[in-house]
Length: 137
View 1 (cartoon, one colour):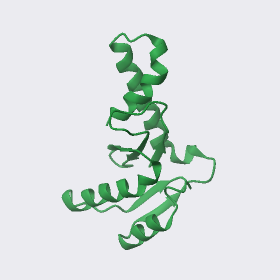
View 2: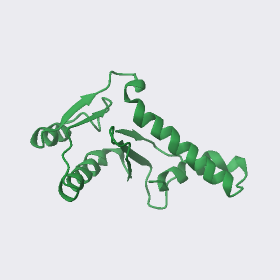
View 3: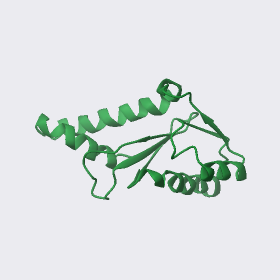
View 4: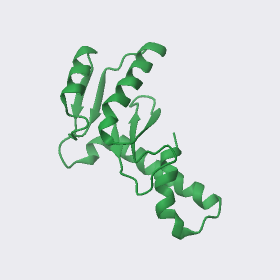
């Protein structure tokens, strides 16, 4: 999982950040939109409960970087209670979290493609890509 933002442009949902979670096996992707990045734990906890209860699946492990939004007592306690192994990538090495980093790039390219498809002038793209990325899930 990876958190990106803040976006230069606030979305209509008043969000500046997005938490992108990719399943290593299926490559299924969830994009959770956040107003402050400190809401990452609550968004992950809600998604984990949905996966575990509604889909009847167990989360075996998660991987993230050492950001404060992922490395805190709330994440540690939740992972311990639910027997989830929390792995961290080495500092300053986004390559170790490559799947979700590539997914972030793909979401950005998708937003640019959508903007190009509606013939929006290119000088709008910088601001509009950030907004469009927040609506892609």
